[in-house]
Image (tube, rainbow, N blue to C red):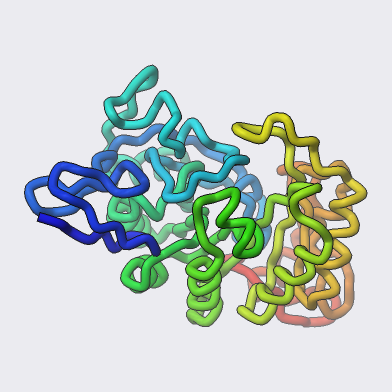
Length: 332
């Protein structure tokens, strides 16, 4: 009997005994299940800035957790060993590295034992193992913790209704225009932007967008047009990151600092309040400045964060110490 998976925009119709596009959602005995449920491949403490989140608890650490899987096939995937079906870890069957069977409660216990209060669902794409993420997120909430999701954002409408209420902060990869998604990702921009708009309009939710810039494929006009779309959707934080050769694009040249600089200028001209650079040697691009007075609020050197205590006291109130402007983020 055919069943529909409602985890992502694809809405795969799956025959009995078969799997959907992602390879981890299976029709078994007439019901759809996640074959990787509880099989944790990574769980480690990271700086929250590594996700990247620059407006969520600066300087804190998070427990980063991942199961296998993704519903895109990006040629430049930075974590293909944990996400792509040509990975030796692809669960058909597991090879080379056995996952650790971990219940949601055990994962939350690990977070608490590490002295942490932030859980990040990351590395692969949690959209395809959202049942495990949501069960864990409920327990994190019970422990007065914070839930963060790093995702491509291609939710189904039903997934948006399930996920947005229980996740506090999202970092969504917004990769390019529709043609870019079609050629390089086997995906679509449309469901991603629909998710972005829903999160931006949801009270109390934090969203940071990230775009990996591939010089020679993206151009400055692409950045400008994408920035306008993000701004209209309500995005206030945008990370532009330099590409380095990886996965199926090892023959493509790295993105230059000059292209990154020009892209940042284009992004800033779109009216997005906070624009940052990733994989850059220029530390100025990582500073958080007040969008009103322009004064520095948070300094960063790599994953090291410097915030003076007096400034942090104001940040806890969500305010710039210099002019009183509201600063976007989660700082409690």
